[in-house]
Image (tube, rainbow, N blue to C red; front, side, top):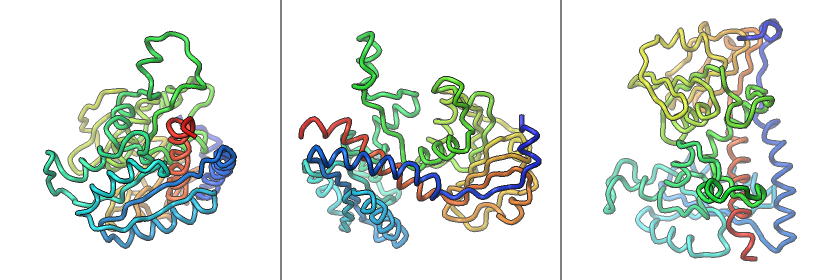
Length: 330
């Protein structure tokens, strides 16, 4: 299923900037539209873990937002004050989106049951959850519910699609989907929700923030997704997850897309497993592949970093929140 003309072409490195630029233009137009209505988009990020990398990422997010006309405030606080600050931000009508830099409490338990980070993640209301990580959005993602008012739409018969509120998806997995659309891995001739059918994908990492939702999103678009982690390999198809014992090599060899998200500097994907014409996306902060070797494989498209697209999706989600929930008030 790798077309031969792709296999004969040279490998190419794809820059996130080029993909992000397409969305940044749309975002800038949207911000102008909102400002004309008297809405000044404001996103607040809570930094409560003193993490230097997170602070850098926050600064970088702030620069992108500023360039696009969005106000971004990082509030550095003590984690013990986070819950109180979050409650205040929920009630503040000038704040349209809230994000929290995790981990804050790591695996520490919560007074309310479960662990504290999960509790916080579910405490951000759907009207302000710019990262799309709260229970409602997570439930929608896994159950392939693409609209917030899906129940009403389903039972009320014909509706005005323009009035439907689209559900939010988490920024990093969404960024990867947008990269794959840009690279024409999604077949636009097929109906939405089926544009990955017949494709085999390998996602290496099953984290709750990236690997698992990404695998589910592609499975919900029709792909066979092999989710690989230290504790086994699972085949994901719409709503189904089955443990398989295929060797990783065989799965990678037949994949048209491989996503690596291993958060260690020692991990390297074996380049000799990559078939010509494969799209390889590295979502880890570490280089999970030997770039020079990979770019010798004919027709490979390699995306080394996704951060710029992730930030664009954060901005896009903020605009979606404003359109869904905040614009009628003004």
